[in-house]
Image 1 (cartoon, rainbow, N blue to C red):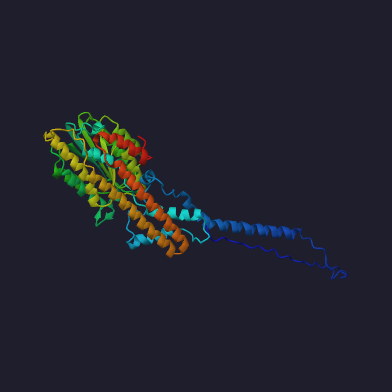
Image 2 (image 1 turned 90 degrees about the vertical axis):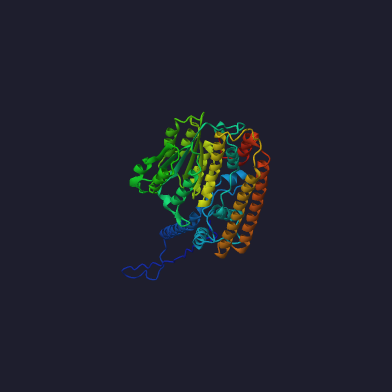
Amino acid sequence: MSRLLLIIFLSAPFFSLVACNEGENGSNQGVKAPVDVTDEQEATEKNHSKIEKDARAEEPSSKSNMRFLEDIPEVPTDAAGFIDQKPGKYGEKSLTDKEVRDALIDDLSKLEPLTDQATDEEIEAYFKYAYSLVVKDFPDPENLVKEWEFQSFGNPDLPDSRYHFKENYNIEVILDASGSMAALHDDKTLMETAKESILDFMAQVPEEANVSLRVYGHVGSSADSDKEASCKAIEQVYDYATYDEEIFREEMDLIQPAGWTPLAGALEEAKDALSSFNGSNHTNLIYLVSDGIETCDGNPVEVAESLANSDAQPIINIIGFHVDADAQQQLQQMAEVSGGIFATAYNQQELSEEFKRAEQTLAAWERWKENALSSLDIKELNQGGDIIQFTGDWTSARLQTYDKLTSAIYDMETNDIVTNDIADELDEQREELQELLEQIEQELVNDLEGKNVEHIEELRETIRNKYNSQVEN
């Protein structure tokens, strides 16, 4: 939209044309001949039409540049909206980094300056745009419920039989080795960080458990000419067997990030491999670590659901490692349809923390195998710490979104995109948003507190119906 209206004043001067009849005898000299203005009027009208057409062509040019605002989603008004939304382009980036801040200002500068005569709709659109750029990723309470199921692994009161201990335990790690995993973060490539975290995790695996390592994207390049070969190159580099650190490390050292991302294909092959491990007497776990979205034309959400419903009944946990908003949405959907946990990690510490959750489960299974647990009828979950952690994550996302919005509004004002009065109105909307997020946070805590193992399914339904409108299982 443009607050600078193009006003074109069209003037049509009247030309008096004097025609002199120059007869051979000059008798008509000096006599004004009648003027036929028909041709002049037609020429003038055509000229007007052309000017108006040119003006119309110019006027929407600025408006058309603003049409991207039409695609910006509304700012959520309830918990489900905040949980399901995509994080902003700068949601996980630090605005103290000059390059990041400059990039934000460049994006904000796509907006045309607003004057104090701006409408409420125009101001609202500018707020939505700023919010869409900086909003953080808010935690999903359903994942917390799934984590409680994990903490209670083996408890026969759990409604999902996949969480009951079985005699055999199989763990498969699926590692994304596509070209984007070569990106540097904290002086390491994403691949190096992922390898270290996986090796630390594997060191905790019980001796009796079988482990597998499947990789994809490690062949070819990201060039279109290599797509077919790279998408087909899915390899189980460590077949289901007890963990041998030396062999496992050697196989992992050979993996280098290279090509494309066949998420669906990798899960299809995992499904084939797990077909001999029936869920009735096998606990089957899959951990998928990926930094990107499917790029090999498959449907990983559909395949994830099919795999989860197979006879192996695996629990599929997915870690989005340094993912963007689109990849996060797809990976989260894969976890949702398969009943697994989705988590995001943006550094080695966060990635290691996600694997530590799995280590706790492995330890519980090992104690069960050794009959160290005399009873599996534990009713109460140690939820206090988990709820505190969840609340802390939500508060952090809320406050960081607030701070980033503050920075964005300041940048719009100092770069003359909005006036001081409009900046004040945007600040008011930011404060209202903050109050809403605080209210939702308290509602979430109230719903999560006081539930035990027997009520997990009830709690899951409460969370699913109230806070996660996109889940349809």
